Length: 80
Image (tube, rainbow, N blue to C red; front, side, top):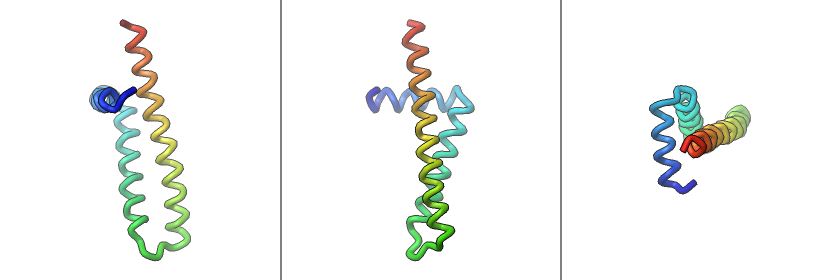
């Protein structure tokens, strides 16, 4: 899937699939918090642990997002 197709599919799913939209929003919240944590000069042990945990969660959500995009693309291609 090229970037243009992926972007348009993502836009389409954002408007039509509430579960997909929730995943994208959650991914964005994790990204925002990770930016805050990476800006800390001296993060505490808890903040370092939070950063590691958020990176794993963010990656898992990214996998779910791409899985949903692939499922949608396969459904559409078999309908035509």
